[in-house]
Image (cartoon, each protein chain N blue to C red):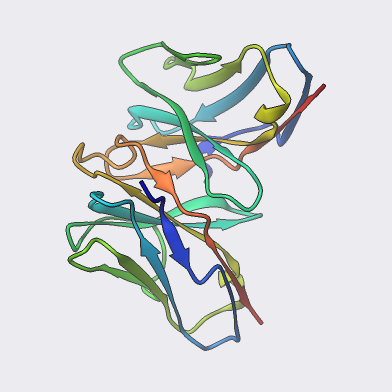
Length: 117
Length: 110
């Protein structure tokens, strides 16, 4: 089975711009979760999508949004970029059938490294 | 407010010895706990998990212990191998939240 893929792997943007990141889950998985990893805050949960609906949401401002398509691929969008948005953005896929976040085994992609200048 | 804490940023052990990684949590609503391993330039990889109804779960060389009264969990790796060198994250979930610790870097030397 192919793993979770994320594109692009690296991205450089300037403050005020917006960015869209893409995640393709493992075939058959219906849940995609997004995480932000920074040296200061560690790994933080952004949101989870299951069957095209946002099922769970972390504590991030509305500038961070996402969506999921019928083929389970997901995109994450960050608008009005700030310097503090520089981070590694990880997505993870799972079957999502257990319902509770994290109780299904999550498989992570390699991440997208976003740098905001 | 850090709800999941890994107080040791790093740990060094010799090959063949036991590695013990610790994690503390504050939220009593957490009922499922996980450990992930992360190599540089890769995403985290699930290692082992434990439900709050258990106090121990084993999978090969990896054992996770949960002490609910102390709100503490630990990951034991026996015997440690150089390939275990990585950053280890503990995580806790309360159904709709998933919170990670900041990680402990484990270095296993030959």
